[in-house]
Image 1 (tube, helix red, strand yellow):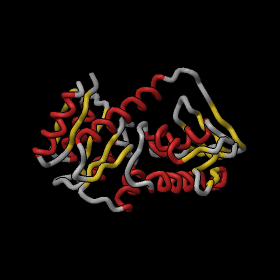
Image 2 (cartoon, rainbow, N blue to C red; image 1 turned 90 degrees about the vertical axis):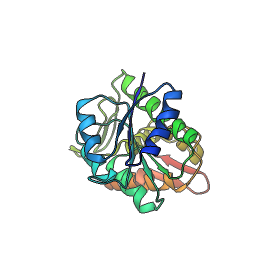
Image 3 (tube, rainbow, N blue to C red; image 1 turned 180 degrees about the horizontal axis):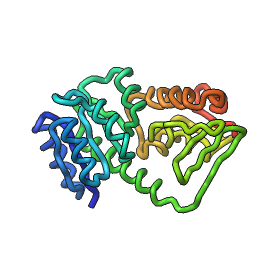
Length: 224
């Protein structure tokens, strides 16, 4: 049984998520603030974290930053605000998905199951695969990306996007294909999510950013 950590200062939100999660056969642990969430993650093994942003004691962004120092488990952020800045900041910190309140509990469960399946699938991969192009090196098995020998610190979802593009190099990929495979479900919502991640990925790749080609009206292609 997968274990879900729900972090929100509103008890009714935690209870609602717990109700639907348990219906999906997920075990649920609750925390009312970021500090408690960090301590739980240090002491217990969880498969996915649902984290509210606006909380007393320690906000969700700060808690996520601390958790990412010792854990790469999937994190889905909850927020009453849907500003692009908040989403970009969250993705830079390493969150896997972002849900704006009020949200559909069924949609949230779909996203939770998607990130858990994807994370589990990546961990189960056995073959040691490496991609190299000039000074760019991607160790798919170790989840390590280096440029000219310098290790990059890439957020999990941005790494997933890079892996999908590279493993389908020289192939024109539609926006729908990328969203479906990288996010793990038929994405519907803010279409700028993909553009935001591409922008962040290009920033990480630096001198190799031009390997990602924009196909206007279609999607993207990685020239490898």
